[in-house]
Length: 97
Image (cartoon, rainbow, N blue to C red; front, side, top):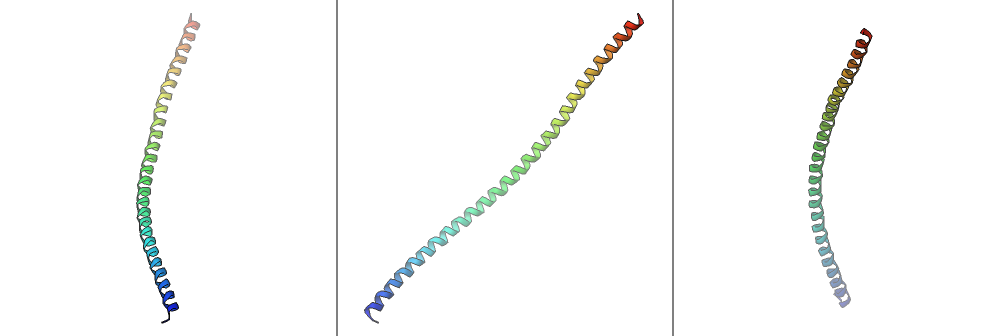
């Protein structure tokens, strides 16, 4: 083997070792990113479950508010009806005099 071939072979070995180191670093980075993705997917699933729970709770509260508002409206309507009945009774009393 000539000296020039030996130099080329040494350069090739150096570049190949560098390539292997880069490959190992990229494999490690890939593993880190894969682990991070897995963690983020778990967090996403947890947050989606929490969101569904909160949406259900919100819907339940809206429904409860509707019933409460209906009860308040019923009470107000009863008071108005009672007031009108009293006014009618006064009018009838005045007609009887």
